[in-house]
Length: 351
Image (cartoon, rainbow, N blue to C red):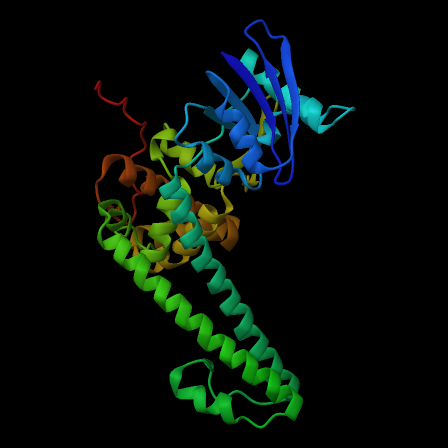
């Protein structure tokens, strides 16, 4: 078995190959992604370790129908590479090969092609929504600059469109306003088309329909959770999924003193964002969550309280995705109880 360390880049890469005795038998620089793929295909019984980075899905796609075992690891876990005082691509590739040979690496999750495509779709939809918000803010800024009073709190409602098109502002400001209105229409059209596609995907996905039983979770947030989580079986407990979302509190212990601080914000930022957004809606829909939020808000403030609700939604999502059961809300006044019972992922049945 050949142990291959790959320092992978878009334009050029370095490869280091160790044999079963740990001796380096080859070191090579390759100048393109396709050259890397063709070289790896020629290796007999090779295991390849590389760090997660830009462009890896293309490499995975080129090698998915070959016998090459591709393993990805997270850069932050490779202390030897990060702290090497003589850091170079060649040494990085050799260090990765050593990690692979000795087993001293932590593998990172590599989603399959379908999940990668789903992520691109839902992330693109979220990005367009952020762009739409920026356009609306720009329009608000233009009207404020021109000193134009608002006719309504929601100036983007259909009934106010004529107002936006005919408002009296300086000529140059009017030009930019018209450009932003055209961009607004285009973004709303594209977002609407993507919303229809995502809703259709969810109608054919029982898992998405179950996630939508959680208060605050709709078509977009359900699809994003499924795409970002990927294979839920990689999270052995409900707490591990909450940790992946970065919604668990930081801790610092010294002797008998334990301090709990804000959330870690480590893990997947998209999953954390959507759960926090859903939490604001959930406290208006679920009386138990509302009661939990209001009690914690008095003690910790709004930010920590809503993150605690988002943590509960992450716990609920894990149980729903692993057990394939709908959300069951708790009754109010159930102090200290989570939204669903905590648990661990059961071992898979023997095939």
